[in-house]
Image 1 (tube, helix red, strand yellow):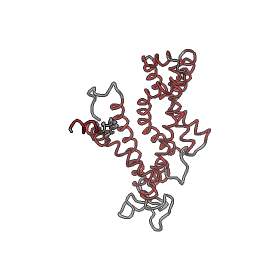
Image 2 (spheres, rainbow, N blue to C red; image 1 turned 60 degrees about the vertical axis):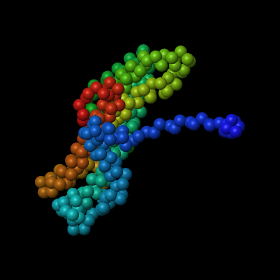
Image 3 (cartoon, rainbow, N blue to C red; image 1 turned 45 degrees about the vertical axis):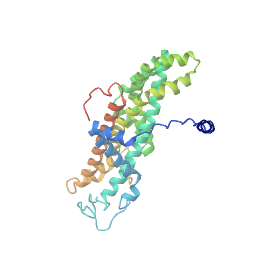
Image 4 (tube, one colour; image 1 turned 60 degrees about the horizontal axis):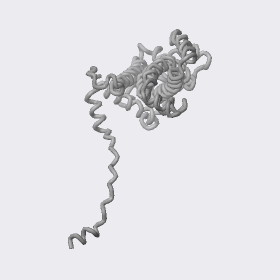
Length: 307
């Protein structure tokens, strides 16, 4: 009877192994323990992104609304950061200014990463005369002072958010392309690239499938570190009058206009935009530095200082 029952038993179907779960929370906790300053920078960046995306709900007033009988009021329960010379709530303008800084920073860094990756990867892959010509152009571009280049571009393009993004992207392309080229030269000599070439893979497939994914960590690190530089550069351009035009509340423009004029009478007008710029640059720099230590295989586990 037992044998008959066993003969009627349905054979067990093979169980497909479950896909490995990406444990986000333990990975984030491990990152916070290893890189406390990087975690603090990440919190600052996250807060800035929340301010930029939710400015319409976070800010108590529109950025250009003149509040009646509230000119040059000091910080209070009603106006956390005070008001400016045009009776506008400073906290609301700081919140909306985060949107401009995030848009300019991410836009400039994204364009610079695309341009730099295209130049650096193709230059390292093809080599020869193409590499020689491209690198001499990059050398000539890097020989000019950054301020001269960006001011010249803005003088030609004119003020405006899109023009600021384009100018900063062109400015950051040269340096990033040099770093990406160096990383691509290392990957290019690996055995899997030679195997792909021997298997008949074309240039486009080798670049897109084999080279770009292996230099992606370098591109991400450069982009994260470049965000702080882009935000600082946008603030400097707005301070000089070449950035985002008023009434849009750029942090640099707030420093240049009423902040500089009423610095002694109402110091909070200049203090809070300066604090916002400093915290944003500090946050992106600390996060980018920590991501470099985590993503770079040469630094991973090398006992680098926690930061």
